[in-house]
Amino acid sequence: MATRGLTKWYGDVRAVDAVDLEVPRGSIVGLLGPNGSGKTTIIGCLLGLLRPTAGTMSLFGHESAAVPDEAVRRIGAIMETPAFYPFLSGRDNLRFFQGISGGGPPEEIDRLLDVVGLTDRAGARFNTYSLGMKHRLGLAYSLLGDPDVLLLDEPTNGLDPAGMAEVRHLIRSLGGGERTVLLASHLLHEVEQVCDAVAILSRGRLIAQGPVAELIGRTDRLYVRTTDDLRAVTVLEDLDWVEQVAAEGDGLTVLVETARSAEVSAALAAAGIHVAEMRIRQTSLEEYFLEVTGEEAE
Image (cartoon, rainbow, N blue to C red; front, side):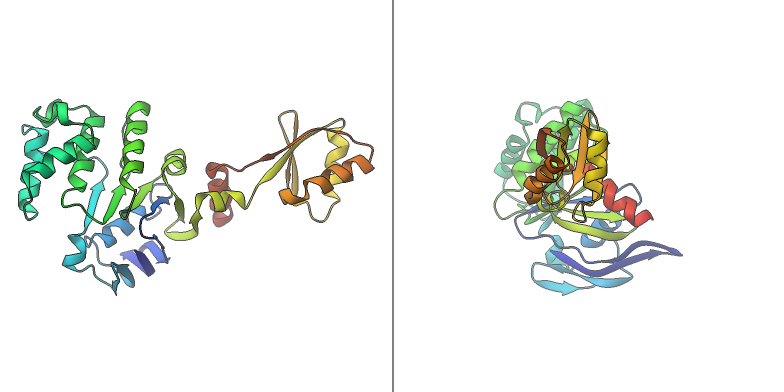
């Protein structure tokens, strides 16, 4: 699944600006950005609910400006908090939506309820469900017909920490095998824990994308404690291949290629400064996100 130059205007507002998004088959990709960055608009276009102003979408080997009906039938989706008939049971809600989407075997309903952990409450009315159970029923609904692609827009919205962890674990299990998952979220820790890759949006523009480990690995840092941190800052800042030195806690963070850690130690030793501790401090997704979105804002 991919987009090429995807653009969407609402009057004078450009909600999505020439986005080239890549979602490899069988992966879980996080579409990450603050509210208003264009995440929901992109998902709306991929679902055929919105027509792009410009650009194309590639789904199941077909590239076009509109999503064909046969492609929509192979996509499951949740758009924020799922809504069901309050006085029907969880099972009857799924039966109803299975029927209007073309039908299916009765055993599919029981299988999906088991997948999302709702077998024991399948006969209870939807309005008696906790928020976490409602989200799990929404995931079961999105899996009706065994779709090849899942588009999930803020699937843990409004949940408490326990409910969020529960739904994240479920999403991770759904992404195995051939199924592709695009997860739109503004929660960095959620994306870091669930997704294989991430695409970062800011003001409708795609500013970074790739595997999570690769993106945050680009900015690995060394954490260093020395016998004279004040002098160490001066020594390290004079080295052309050290990008940045900053105080952190009781030591220093040095932005440098970690393969040059021995050279960092040697430079300090030559200045009569001894290293008490040195370790690689990997950048978190949150730090990387703030770094690239801050550059975009500037």
